[in-house]
Image 1 (cartoon, rainbow, N blue to C red):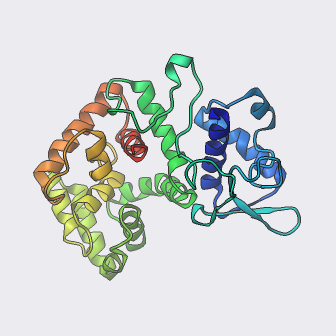
Image 2 (cartoon, rainbow, N blue to C red):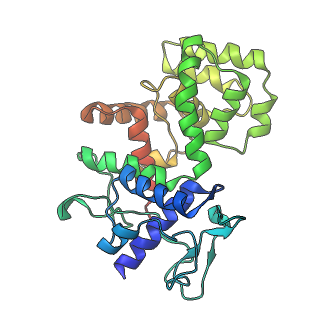
Length: 294
């Protein structure tokens, strides 16, 4: 039972990362091996290790009614990997309509327990577990979100050199945090975005940096911290309900309380320093831990 569940979880994680792409059988097998190695995943059985990736996207084998249909056939022996909202589940599927997002990692038995709903607190003192959660983050977000985050990692160094954001990059960073305010983000003109993001870059005080960005239409404090996190990744942690929950703090009466943010930021920076990790790694770990709670 546990092996079947892990099998399904691994297939689901791979499907999330490949969503929207068309693959051949060889593509799927190669990707599966790379995925397992990249995330340090403990495979559920020796048989699976030998056959990882083969037919995982197709429901043509004997367990085809026990797991979701992750793809549909395209032309010339290819399959289109579907987004999660379009997965189909057979009548013999066990448990919930969609599989759990938790995946075990490799390691000794004492170290490889999967994150589950009964995990009582974030592993503040366990650097290895924090790193595992940060790796797990990539299996919990959509493929398009992962691509955008990787793109930010490539593009932001240039923005840091010129000390301002262009309008297209500003809008993408703001949407990465919250898409709801997109029309308001778009209503800001290029000159204003450059002026205010330059002011935020040059600010020597956290309050001044946040206040500069919140002048922009659609940007509240949480979105401002996400933008600043990418602008100055060694300085500004992100605040949202996932970070607050993972830290074991009650939610504030208002997320616009800058003093609450400053206290949370101090705690996140302290956690990063304690383990010699960057703020992006800590944010991914906090996000992943809270995401996996029931």
